[in-house]
Image (cartoon, rainbow, N blue to C red; front, side, top):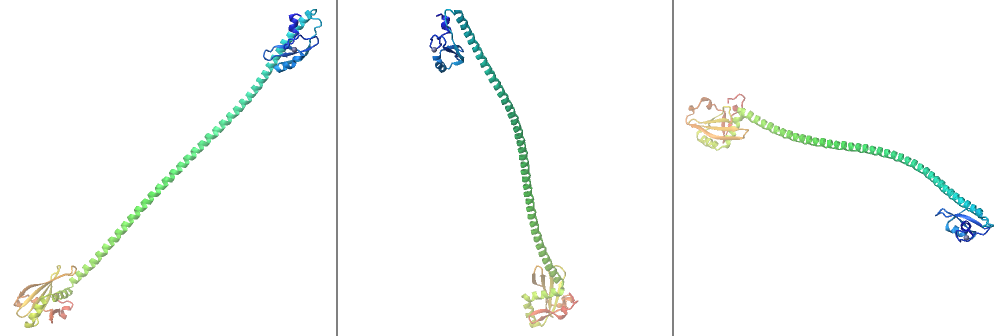
Length: 318
Ligand SMILES: [Zn+2]
């Protein structure tokens, strides 16, 4: 046997020379891409190694190897070419498969790109919506802030008005109090004026003035002297005269006997409610006195001097 015959007609695994008519099978080793002949006894081992069976079994026909040297050589060449062809076809399959896979991936990529574009559009739309909502929220916040501010201003105004009302109320109360005070003062002045007017009217009434002056005189110790002298000299002639118009009113009481006379001065202020009785001049001869001082308009009755009935008459001399 030649080396070619061995190369072309032995099992790649057990190295046994293939028998005539034995169906060898062509396998490809995926690692080396080489095509190898395997005898029927080693099929399973080739399968276990992960080799891939290629086509139908080949029946090697070597009736007479030495004589059919050229034939075996040609057969070997055909086998190698077939192996190379199968290798190329295998590579081509792989390329086709890779191409199909690449096309599929490109399709998937296009789908993914389309989906990403859709997602991007969706995100932009959501973003616009979010911005719109943010704008709306900002406007709403601004409106709320404005409303709050207006509300605060309203409250402040309300407090100011309240404070002004309080001030005005206090002022009205002060004014009312002042008015009340002034009315009281006015009333007091009216009363005082009334009293003063009454006093002055009474003071202006000569008859009243004389009567009051005599009452004061009758309460004074001077009346006792008049009573005492009268016991020896008899009833005196008494003239009561109002002197002048000034205040206090001065009333002069002249008491005269034949050999003696006395003058007393009574000072009256009805408003001040003061009265004084003083002894004035005195003398022995009534003729020293002016005649009108001897015009009698009062008399001594027991222990007091009283005006005569004439003295109460209207138009009596002053
Ligand atoms: Zn074998």
